[in-house]
Length: 179
Image (tube, rainbow, N blue to C red):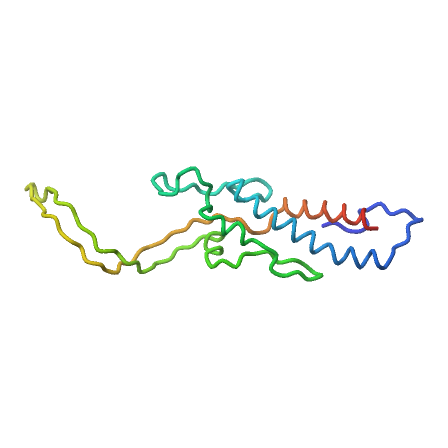
């Protein structure tokens, strides 16, 4: 935490009420901008930076999206959705309004009903109780199926010591320039 006593104050310097008002108006804006930039950088880093970088768990090796694209990056909508939600004199709230942002940030285990489309099964041979059987080609009708979905936690928004240090440095710099 940075306090005003950490700043060198000259005895000849008088505090201007207008500059103090401007300072207190600008501090939440600066902190919010710094937080948004910090949280968006996690997509480039591939992990969450608190006191050190905690990398996200990689995708499974056979995943369809393993074509060189970063984790949590399909269209970039999740990264672009990070913004300042609310600014008050006491603090700033940064978040995302996308419904799946919380599931990715905190991890989720859900069970959903999915629709399996009509498809054909190929003819093949199988062994059962030591006997070989020929299985004919068949058509599977469209049906519902229960599917377990396990999203690992890939935190990109949260409390960060590194972010607190960056905000403190920016606020000190702003105070020196304003006062």
